Image 1 (spheres, helix red, strand yellow):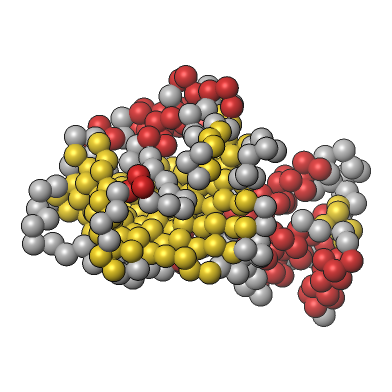
Image 2: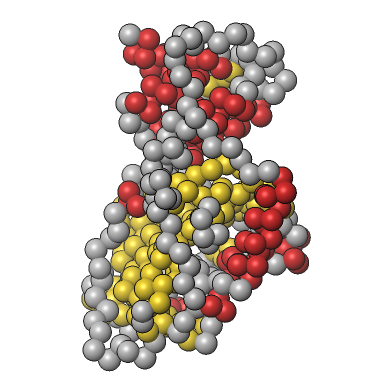
Length: 370
């Protein structure tokens, strides 16, 4: 009954304004929502309506992480914790004495965190040097939503042959909506992206970017336990250019998260979000998320881009590109290979898992091969 009342109270808060919660009520709400398998984005949207009446101690957020909370919910709880820092401390917990607290994985020490950042820097700056020459199929599925409510409408599907030779990337469009098209990639209209094969990582970690790094939490991606590190690049050092209809361009500062495999030290995901876009620029929001996965080419295993998701907002109009990199093979062996458009990957592959439930005992990480 308590769960039902809490959910009804939340619905009322969403309809009529902010809902006041104690830290204990917030804890119980999130746990109830996790048991009911509410989506991460739904929970995050609900939490935007919450107003805390007391401090939210950081230990409570870590306890919720161990329960399987998603990254969007985590971000909202972190904002709530920051906003409540000057409020009175919470009263004594009403949790029954026999209710166990989830076992947490301790964070690395400050010295270990500094060492991790330097190892990731070396990895990122040398990432493209270790890549082989290869071919793959790049499939870009573009969507839009004129109402801004994430009711997505499919715009088109672009299939291209991507060649990576001597650390240079070249794309040739083969099909648009499964119909053969002879169009230059640079002349393709609409939103596109580049830089997935090393540029993005290198620019984050280069010394001239003056990037600030901070270890934030543990995470899980595709059954790999991962360090989640927040970073920020100031606008004065940024080289991330965002173009609008190839007539306007800005170079904003940006922030994001890096997910690094705790066992192999390899980067599994990097996200970017533009900061302080000029009010005069038509794009108000720009985000990018790039996932890497282990891929075999000619008998050796490499960590290569698997999927990117690009999102932008212009007024109420939302734009989303889902970009997949499929069918990797050695460069020069394409004479008898078809570049058909494969089915989309299962979206479940890209959801962040629980740090306590979704990682095998041996972590499940594959060793890095030379």
